[in-house]
Image (cartoon, rainbow, N blue to C red; front, side, top):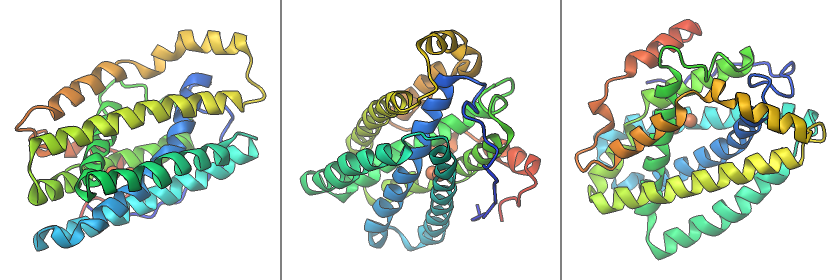
Length: 270
Ligand SMILES: [Fe+2]
Ligand SMILES: [Fe+2]
């Protein structure tokens, strides 16, 4: 695992860059906002518990923080293109920050404690690793359907999500291996992710001045050509997470990350 600093040019990214499909594009746009703000939350959650983590985990935890921090910067760089397209990226980011980060995060910490913030982080990290694993399966259209610049950024991000998939998990396990704590973090994470992705998708659609009802209906019918078996795969990954003895390293998919990094001409793990 290492911190890479790639450079992407998003200036030619088209309005419907994801398979020319408004649903896929606006779901992805919602994630372009939720993911970086969420990643800064992961960094905060890990830092808050850093003193409680075993010394031997600290090098990996710092690399985890480094990778998430570059992911945050790259997604925010993408926001500039969405602004140019007149899309409501800033208002959705303000809404998510005000409700989830400024309201819910302090409330959860006060009522349950910082371990729940870490547990939710572990839950979210399972989703990012599961999405990456699904996108890297042979035949998946999740990355090929994206415009090249976006596919490269998401491919790099997904590869690093697999590289660091067990870092936050191992930290939580060392601090408190309680099953109920881990499961509760996933329930909280899944609920927030689904609710905010739905709100964000609707938010981008409502703010898209070029969108018509006819286009919305037409593209909904072709959405499965892009999403493929994403939902069943996520359900499967989610069920695995709730198995009492679950450990992300029981599934060795690090080679998938390595192949993608090779394909992108990026440095392999050191
Ligand atoms: Fe990330
Ligand atoms: Fe991550």
